[in-house]
View 1 (spheres, rainbow, N blue to C red):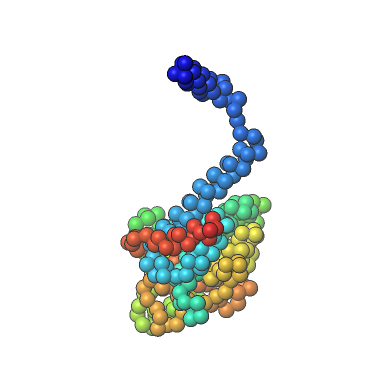
View 2: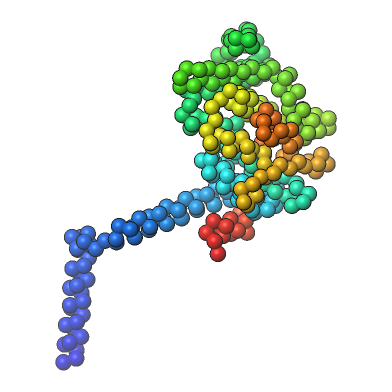
Length: 316
């Protein structure tokens, strides 16, 4: 009798399971709308957070010196970049986390915007129809009228020939959606003088014949950034994100969101630690600083930094 009852119960259970797993029935069994919304928000937040962690760790792993920076300074710089919708990938060149020697706090990561980050933020604002920066090669410049902001150039058509031709200057321009235009041209001599004035490390490179700084490694990229800063900060329309980026560029970001500027000593220069001068006037966007390190062979993952970053985002 007991066996019969057990078999009856099992048959009933199997029948209920089969009934409940029917598509028509499953469609009736749904989570409350509020619970669904919370679930998807948590899932999206988790996925987005893991993407952020992955991008931070990947960027840190390309620079061995950066791995010795405080985890909080790395996280703060990365979160600022993320809030601006920019990637820390050195290959994209939108922003960099650069190791600096702070005598008070040790080695810290500094947030530095790349020229491609300037372009991204400007175009994303929706105010610019055109925005461009270009190196002018020897033989291309016909005339430049700074009063009327008119430039005439004959660009070398062969890309290979043009790339191997000496640069004599830099040109930047923008056009608003309403048709307003602004242009700017600097000779390479003027750019060189600017770099030497505002980059102590580059001046040291020139004196010592070394090439530790990004000005020495990739002068054109730094020149592009300088031209965009000069052009946009003086005459361009700046969104909230752009103003934030301009204000925090070349700064170490504290945990509370405040920032400060640091400068390494000349005798601390090495190939992995890019250094530069503190802006002469943080409120003005007319100075130029170092950005980024060259991409190195990827070392083993810094799991301790990754754990600390994850704990900072998710909590204990």
